[in-house]
Length: 337
Ligand SMILES: *[C@@H]1O[C@H](CO)[C@@H](O)[C@H](O)[C@H]1NC(C)=O
Ligand SMILES: *[C@@H]1O[C@H](CO)[C@@H](O)[C@H](O)[C@H]1NC(C)=O
Ligand SMILES: *[C@@H]1O[C@H](CO)[C@@H](O)[C@H](O)[C@H]1NC(C)=O
Ligand SMILES: *[C@@H]1O[C@H](CO)[C@@H](O)[C@H](O)[C@H]1NC(C)=O
Image (cartoon, rainbow, N blue to C red; front, side, top):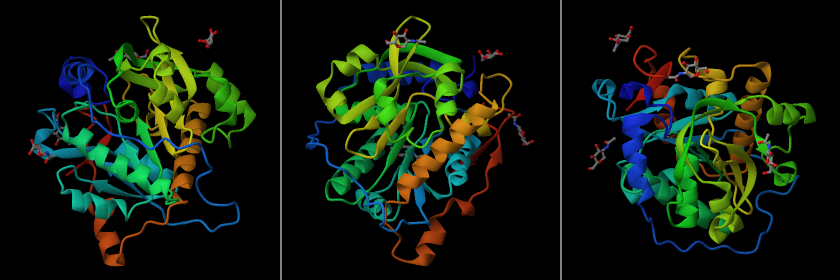
């Protein structure tokens, strides 16, 4: 199997295998997270919202030789459309910038999306940059400056590594398979699914609405056995992989507005390769629409902004044109930087 089909996630053989196998040995970041007792975060019901939210998406380094001619970094368009469909604008965040530049970007955006891919969770620039934003977001939320983070697939995995301060991933292949979510009791009181109509929640637990493209994951047992993870995140759903391992598939911060899905909500509406199992049913589309709106609504509670309008317009992804890549990747289009 060629690398060009490995782009979907921390998923398919060769490329990501190497990346994530390295990750397994990783013991990351000696950080000290403040884990205060839960308190409500965010605005009171009658406080105004920010109706012009901007979400930052961290770019991924290009490793696929066939993509290299187009740029050193990329973002699949499906993630951009996902955010835009929720009613927000997107800025791409380049990895190789100074800490000061990242801090300035952090103060200008209203949320962060960590996309799937195949980067080393310890040594990659993606991991280092994510850590910068993660720490800034924890600090900001601690002083009432609301800042949401969403991690998809590798983004989910990276969030567990940052919170646990160690890599707890193990081999749990759920690759190119769509699954219903086995929702936990905590899902019914979650923020993520709060606005869902009951019939969609039912469909979510019965129909294969979530596309999985991963080689690794965190087992429910390991997750529940780790005090840092369980005090930080609620487990909203679990699933069973081919090898029988039960892995955590959806999580939500207890105190912080941080969210993680091991599956890929963006594919339901924006990826169509017939070579992959992408859920496209009416309920699959509805699920993805509601989650995109949910995350953008979280961004509406953030009042970060660029210091100047010109600076804001310069940063927006509208300055870039996505490229047709469906003939050599699993994506339809991608932005290159
Ligand atoms: C970022 O910097 C690293 C190390 O200097 C380099 O190997 C990598 O190619 C750079 N990535 C991008 C996307 O520019
Ligand atoms: C969902 O999880 C529960 C608790 O682990 C288990 O008893 C049940 O068999 C699971 N259901 C499915 C459909 O996987
Ligand atoms: C992915 O799954 C679909 C549907 O089950 C199947 O048709 C396709 O061949 C699979 N693709 C790969 C690359 O395994
Ligand atoms: C894919 O299609 C584009 C546009 O049609 C073309 O320029 C490019 O050479 C193709 N790439 C491959 C690897 O086939």
